[in-house]
Structures are given as structure tokens and as C-alpha cells.
Length: 210
Image 1: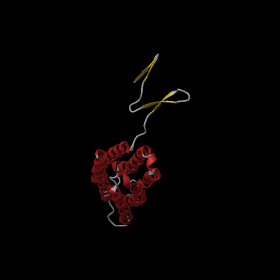
Image 2: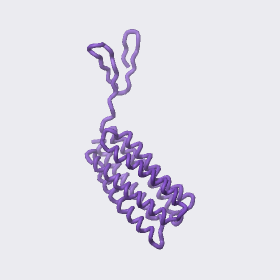
Image 3: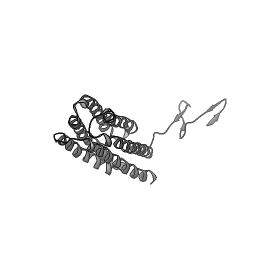
Image 4: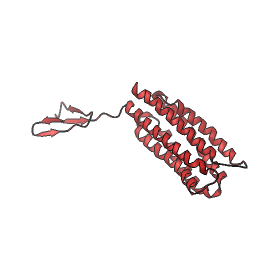
């Protein structure tokens, strides 16, 4: 807070007061969030993704044999959460050059949710085909984002996660043609993805405190 004759001016945290040499007007500039702020925000997002994946897998695993009401809700919820996380990430990462990959994630997640709604009544094999196709393309998008973020640190696990998502997605499509199709692998896929988020969050914590 700065006091002037006849009035009081409040500065936001970190705000900088400057004066124009020509007009004499005073302006307040608030610094943009720096790399450390972005790292902290990304770490929190990764921790939230880990917690969600853990809970989601725990709920899906006992109901993986068939597509009941709870299973159906969980299947549609997962890509929607992926979309929401990508939206949050994109808003805080506009200056880092990763936004296009995140926008692709948003679009792909939306299509996946709609596709799952359409095939839920067709049984587990149909769900596996849609989920597998989404896992492949979403894995590619995640890999692109992680590679562009390598300089920020903590992205090794995300690179591995994106790569394994492509492989897992292809295996889901193949599994759909088997005689005993089950969603157990999908629960494991989500759980492993959550572990990768946790590893990246821990690595980012070291970067932020360095």
C-alpha cells in the first residue's frame, strides 16, 4: 500500500509501481507467473490426477466383468476428467508451447466420452475397442506434450506413460477380440498412469525446491 496526497493506492502482492516520464501517470504492473509458479501448479495437478486414478481403479476393479451402471459411469467419467485436467493445464501453460498438444487431448477426450456412451450397451468388447483407440491417440498427445516440456524437468515418467498408453491401447483393441474380454486391464492402465503422475509430481517437487 502506498500513500499519496489525498488518496491511498493499494498494490497487489508483488505489484510494481511505475511512473511515465512524459505524462506523469502512475501505473501498477503485476508480474506474470514465472516458471516456478507453473511447476508448482503442474505438480498439484499431477497429484490430483494420481489420487483420482487410484480411487477410479479401486472402484472399477470389482466391477470389471460387465458394464453395469457404476462401471458405465466410471468409464465415461475418466476421459471427462482427462479433459478437465487438460483445460486446467492449458490455462497455466500458455507460454510454454505445449498448448496445442493439450488442446488435442481435450478434443480426443471429448470424442472418447461420447464414443463410450454410444457403445456402453454393446458390452465389454465394444468398450475395449473405443477405450483402446482413445488410449493410443491420447498417448501420442501426452508424449508430444511431455517431450516439449522436458526442459522443465520431471517429464521422464510422462514420456514413459505416453509411450505405454499407445502400447496398452493397441492391446485393448486386440483383447476385445478374445473370448474373455474384461475391463480389469483398463483398471490397471489407469492405476499405472496414476503412478506415473505421482512420480512426475515428486520430481517436479525437487525442481521447485532447487
